[in-house]
Length: 620
Image 1 (cartoon, helix red, strand yellow):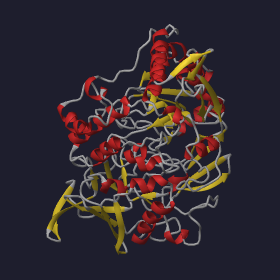
Image 2 (image 1 turned 30 degrees about the vertical axis):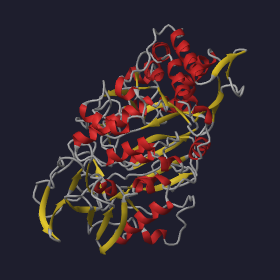
Image 3 (image 1 turned 60 degrees about the horizontal axis):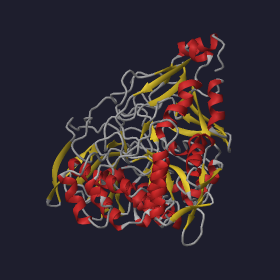
Image 4 (image 1 turned 180 degrees about the vertical axis):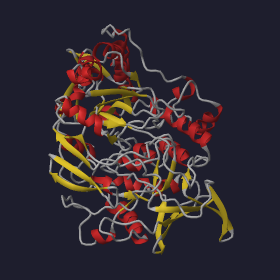
């Protein structure tokens, strides 16, 4: 559903279209056929908010404006252009822009007009027309036009990071119909998500970029149109965004109660440990915690005991990412499925969770974990209709076995896993010689490098190295800075790494970027694993062309099964809750959205709480 990694899908709001009824859409005749014109778009079903909605359900529309929130950036940055592969972009560099439409945190696969006041499309969804709002303006006061939209699409597709071309490969062209109307033509009507996908287009100012090279990194402050603009920065140290007082969309219904801070500042820290210490010292206001050990024991500090720092565990209904050890399939070492599966058996998750993670983690066993999209049990009749034509081209276990990860007794002595791994490696042509796992034919020792981008990931990597050593496999850990890590991953210059594949509740075009054969050949793509399998390509296309929600679920489950049984990764773990901590100076909406309850876009500074913090001597 969404472009991942370096892409920017700007947040914002939609304008209430004068004269519209509260129904989600209206039908009218045009060019001999019925078309749908609406303030929003839902891939399957109807939009949830009417055209005359006053605000989102999970905000406080009366939230006060003002104050500063300080957040942590990781590593460094050397660019303010987040749309290209070159350079390392600053945190929130893309938040100064807006998109044609924007999604909400309480609906799946649904967007509402932001720069666009309406979307029109035929029932076969072979094209989409967007009419832009007359009030939409760049920060220099010039109007946002159809020329800007066409320029943005063509520039990002031809000069941006490779995921744009992959994501929009079924969008044939963008045409200016008049100053405020633009039409996108799609390859055919089989991809029902394309109107939503192209609605995510980040719109860039054509007149500003006319004298600049889009493909070069730059620290020149760019022109945007969003609720914030870049106010100050120092490369690699901090970036501060200032709220635009006369923002054209400030009072639109989707923006009411949002974008409340006058300043959003990111201070950069070299790694997660230093950032955590900065938070505890009061230098950072808000933190999302990803380390179970920190959540269990790291917050045993006076500020938590006094209430100056608040902690919250947030329930949600969103998919959880596949966090995993990812193999680079471009390496001959990992082309044999049995070799990859061997490492699955070496992992002693139960010991790791109990001993090092305080029992707070859940094993990931799906690429669409925590959702109805995840494969379960044996294939259903509907799934078999998808899978049967691929029999013989996908693992036989897809049809006969439920995918289950091995479970240990948690004692730390995973003998059964070691036996199973050794047996699989033997089947694949390896044997132990002088304590080293060695290829029988070539004499090559089974040895590889695990590339890490953060020191905190060593907490799992070190035990994994030891588990591998027990069967004679040599794993070399190499931790590099975030910029070097990103460059090596863009170039596919790694053997194994700890990867994260996030999914939405409405998978679509982005699946090509994750698993498609073309993406495997494109440096900088999200197919870092190097999957190039015609059967998986076929399944991806079936997911994209799903005719309805039930079809999408069944086709996605089929894809999930095939990915899992190929053992492209060693699944790790994730928390089924979001953990956040913050200094107690904020107001928060009472109601949280069910899919994305974290984040601070609807928070505000509570003056009384802020004053109490300062009076108590807390560093704020």
